[in-house]
Each structure stands twice: as structure tokens, then as C-alpha cells.
Length: 295
Ligand SMILES: *[C@@H]1O[C@H](CO)[C@@H](O)[C@H](O)[C@H]1NC(C)=O
Ligand SMILES: *[C@@H]1O[C@H](CO)[C@@H](O)[C@H](O)[C@H]1NC(C)=O
Image (cartoon, rainbow, N blue to C red):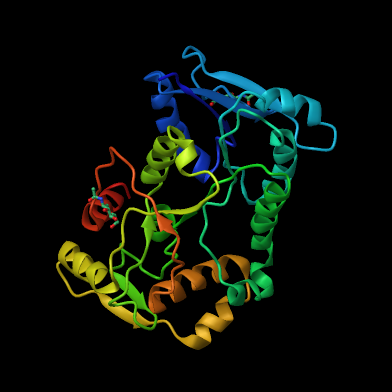
């Protein structure tokens, strides 16, 4: 089988940095031909120049159409990992992809949760509407896309304590029925591996919304692991409805509060959970021990 031509836009952020190494590996083993799409001004020197990876500049504004079309014309899969402030500029990429006879699927930069209408009705979460608008633009222009939804990134769970668990301090915050419900966690390493694997069979994911997560410990399982690791009881506190309402007032804390609610009520969206080959699951305990060791 000839390698799949895969373009990656945005290789530096949280998601882009997770995607780059496995994509480079797949390029090295000739499963894909990797094309790095970058802004003229971006520094690409961290990407090896001796592997035959192609670099193409794009210009995501009103004047870039010709250049962008040239940059993406032969690509079969295009993955965008642009950061939150650049979500809107993907419309120029979609414009360039419209009408492509080669494109199997475009994966826009979502890599978030499926938010409910009710959640999106909180003004603080309004910026997230942009991701939906981008998907709508692609729909209107008949550009095939794959929406990738995730669980809480491991990094956010551990370093930012986004679910209210502090593994270092041995504390767990519990909202509603979180003790018995699963928290969906997506390790960034898994995300990179999964997206790379899925790029090899793009027709299977075109036009779909899929969910990628590799761990789903319940609150009780998290407590048991922390109690075992620390050798003393985990401190358990309640997250209250009052605190939830308060947290829904600001973008970052509202995303965290939404995770707590999905976990507490097990109200995760029911997207298709996709499985991929070649991933060796780490257990929650292994992942936690690795985090504690690295700190
Ligand atoms: C580009 O990034 C490399 C490290 O990846 C750094 O050494 C170099 O100084 C950077 N160049 C510029 C012009 O910023
Ligand atoms: C890895 O974990 C996920 C989430 O718990 C599960 O759905 C999947 O089947 C597991 N895969 C393996 C190979 O154990």
C-alpha cells in the first residue's frame, strides 16, 4: 500500500506536540508521507530535516487562498491542531480544501468534549461555539470532516487538577455520583497514537464524530489507587451545586466544572468510541505513578 499523504497544521501546542512524534514514526516506517503545514513565520527547526518530511507554508487570511490550495491539493488527510485563539482561521483551510478530489477527511482542531446545549448557554462557554461553526462551514462546503472528541487530557487531570483530584496531595473532590461513575481520561500519548492509526484508514472515520479515550476510572478506583500509593486514606471532599454555578462563570473553570458534571452524572455524550491497533493500555495506577515520579 502506498503511504497516505497526511498534512499536519499546528505542531507546537498541547495537541500538536502529542501528534507529531507518532506521525513522524509512521512517516519513517513509510505508512504515511508527512507534510507539515506551517505559517511562513513559524520555526520548523525542531522537526528533523533529513527524513523527507515536506514543509509547506500556508497563509490563513483573506489573501492566502491560492497558496493554501497549492499546499493542500494532494493531501488525503489533513489534521489541524491549531490552538484556541486560531480556531476561526481554519475557515481559510476549509476554503482551500473545498473541491479537493484527494481529500478523504479533515480533522479540525476540536479535541474537546461534546458540550450540551445547556452548557453552551452559559456565556462563559460561548467561545466553544466557534468549533461548531467551523464544522458547519465544512459541511456547507462539502468538505468531509471527522470530529474528534476526547476525555479529560491526562495532563489536565494531573497537572491542572481539572477534575478536582490532586494526586500529590492525596485529595479527591466528588460531585454527585462520581464515586461510582467513570471519568473519561485521554492520555496525550494515546491521542497521538490513535490519530496516527486512524490516518491510515481515513475512509473509516470520514463524516463521523468519534471519541478517543483510553482510561475510565471511577471515583472510587481513583481513591483506591491514591490510598494505595500514599499508604494513607485519601481525603475526600464534596463539590457542591453552588460551586458548580459559580465555576460556570468563567471559561476555564467552566470547562473544569463541565467535566465534573459529566463525571458526576455520567452524562458523557454517546459518541462512537473508536478502538485502534497497537496501543498498550497503561492502567490509571501506572499513569499516576509515572506522573508522581516526574515531579
Ligand atoms: C527555532 O527553534 C530552535 C529549537 O527548536 C531554536 O534553537 C532556534 O533558536 C529557533 N530559531 C528562531 C529563529 O527562533
Ligand atoms: C483500554 O482502555 C479502554 C478504556 O478503558 C478500553 O475501552 C479498551 O478496550 C482498553 N484496551 C485494551 C487493549 O485493554
